[in-house]
Image (tube, rainbow, N blue to C red):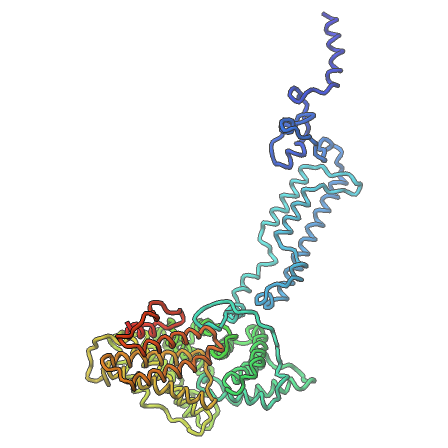
Length: 637
């Protein structure tokens, strides 16, 4: 018995020294093998090969780290590892701060043109930094003695700290959100919309920044364009013409004087560039200055951020009005509809649509300026809404502000200030009348027609010697035509006539036909004389006048469509197509007007016996106003 025990005791060391097969071995590694660890699968850690590797016949390789030597970890190695983590965190924070400064300095250039390849190569995305940090911590950090750090708790703790730090909201970017919703960013967004299609909101193509500083023009020629703009004080009644000219002269004097004590205010620079750009747009003989026009607009936009930071909110509204006027004549000016909507929202936020409190500390000149600012935005809003079939920005029921008093309502210094005041009030009254067309009932159409006739028959006195006299007379005729076309497109079949009204629906249609014919002929005469300047609003009016004339003429002459009437319709459509072509050269989307006019001309020359199916009125381009679609379908279907 004792011999047997001694024999077993002698064999035991030999058995322990002989490696067992994988199926019977109970000896294990302290960690998973390299293959199982990479595949994130469970490992039984058997020696010499785990069950997974043995089953697949793969080589079972232990991992490089050996966690059995935890006792060898010294305080020196732990401190060195923690220091390396702190240095890594400091480097990541420095890179993040550098990236934040780069975005701040680039500002507007990045929002309009995107980041450049150089910026992308110099800056590291936040996700890439997080991934790099995780991968760096997954590898082994070498301490100062060249030994590997094998602390599981230290490694996992560092990974958790950096993961939580990466997922947390970065405090250095906390001001990005308010900046993105600032007024400057919103205006930049409206200007970034492509203006070539006024009825759509598409991103504008990138244009080169010419950034001209009026260096290519003399002072006299610059002031000539500014005076061209100031010939229209009725569109901006709050502007003092003399003060505006002095500001422009001061800016040009500072530009020519290299030793000027101080630079001119950004608002004055903006006014000079925008007035000159609009004056070029209003001049039919300045088409060769289109590149200078774009560069002036670009230079004015460069002053806009400083104006929004330093000037009052009333000046912000003034800037948006200037930008809206420019966008009416240039597709590169952005979206007039969005700019005007932003201006109206700013007016409402300042309570400009309400009468100032009598107990307020605002003086009379400031109160009148606030009133005129609102009525200027109001008139533009009614114009765009009526022409483009867009909703009104504010209903008349919410407006309580009054026009300034007759004696002290205007600060414009002219030879006939009373006449200018009467013209402005006359145009504001028209805006209120057309607003009632949009919000009124169909049964009140003849009542509104009576009001429009009264307005047209009682115009203010216009100085025939004034440079703006021809433009004013043409404008009055255009406004009358616009209102009558809108009324004619809404006329129901039966209207109960009141004895105090000036006519019935037949009188309205006849008046619309005659006014449309005169308006298109007057526009074509200006084109022949070389003095026709067309905005996209003018193109809308000319197109709708041609459609109304052709459709109402056909509807009134269903039984006897005489050859004379057919010749008049062909003449009107031909002239309107020529004028619309001029506008389509600046606003390509308006080419749809030409297509509809061509189809309308084809159908007008057909009779009931020769009607073909080549033209269909089932689908119109989106830019065609709904009232014109209704007139065409009602007359030709």
